Image (cartoon, rainbow, N blue to C red; front, side, top):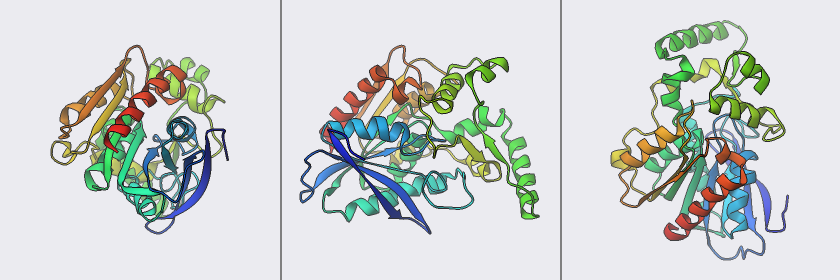
Length: 313
């Protein structure tokens, strides 16, 4: 794949027991015999590397001369791992370190200048990874969310114990030969959502993004393997941020709130992070999903992120 401003190279990255599928975005004319800063662009929950993390943010970084890499999370997209559509925070967090293992072995990557830009649920996993892996030198979250928090709230109908009981029953059924339960996180269309009385801006815009040509991708699947989602109920992306999140941090959010709570959670992250070098960019009148692909909102996010990475990488 190529663009007048960059080229994209597909690579396979060894992980715990399978490969992660990744795309490296090289600015046109980059001298790969020299070392350069690299930004890992991490996709949202229910997304894949070709969607907003790749075609908007990695591409936008590469157009401005920065090397970027996107990857499919374990169990998702073109990456390996069974059972499919597992959303496990331990694996989602450790995926970043496997990508960094790949980068530090490349002649074109400066191991002292590795950053992360992550969107929505991917941002929560990136926060956890940044606290663990000190090779990450700077972090930008865009419309960042915290899937563990949401699982204890709206994703479980505000009944996490009831959800865990149902997960336990489903795992028992599958252990006895029953079928997997794969739950789509979104309605099949905006019209269906409205017909069912759904009015939340995040749910409606997510449905429009993922269920239409606006953002749909053949490898994308906005679904969870229900029997495997229990681990999210007790996980929190921001746990110990006051102690361990010391790297430079940029938080980008829109100020129009919705069910996925990126405004509230972004403000919380900014306040709790131990980093002495942290910046907050609030985009007025912007929704969560406008930060996925709408030119004005993503342009502002990229402008802030590029300046931030130039400063700290």
